[in-house]
Amino acid sequence: DAPWLAAFDGAGHRLDGLAAVARAAGWWWPYERVAVLAERPVELHRDEAGRLDRADGPALAFPDGFALHAWRGMPVPAGFLDDLAGITPERIRTEDNAELRRVMLEHYGYDRYLADSGARPLHRDETGVLWRIDLGDDEPVVMVEVVNSTPEPDGTSRVYWLRVPPATRTAREGVAWTFGVDPDSYRPERET
Image (cartoon, rainbow, N blue to C red; front, side, top):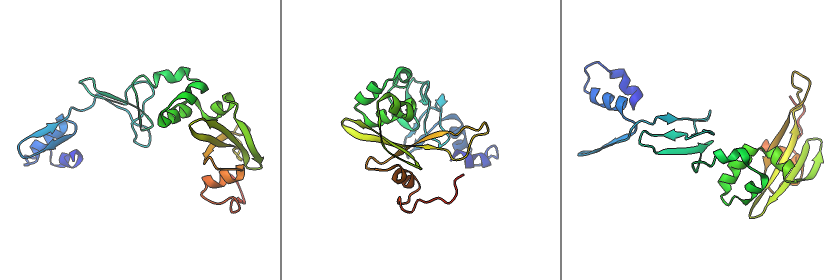
């Protein structure tokens, strides 16, 4: 409510008290006989989607020392992100928490993980290469390696990795899935 309270700020309006609280406090909940107020955070870091996100410290921190660490909106234990610099494929495989394992994979890089883990190519066609690595008690990582059809300014073509459902059997099926169509319908007339 703070933004609309600013419209009345300093006008001697009866909402001046609410505006003063909004300037001085974070979240607050007024009740009939009591009010609960929280301090404003001293640190707040978000990604472009507005999710809590910070790789080198707390994404949200308060003056009393309470802090929340997060990676792309996913809460993670304090110190978890510090350990990502020395992460190995074996460490990723042995992580019990599937969400933390996903964060590790994103940080490590799917392409690097597949290369370092001995992933095997399942299928190859004109759309790309389908790769798979099994993860023990979790669903396998299945990805399609595709090459950008439009060359970069220096003439090179970038390689992209598209994560697809584990049941994917062909590269075409995986690429078609990313566009929300079945493999038979995926027939682009022109690629840019």
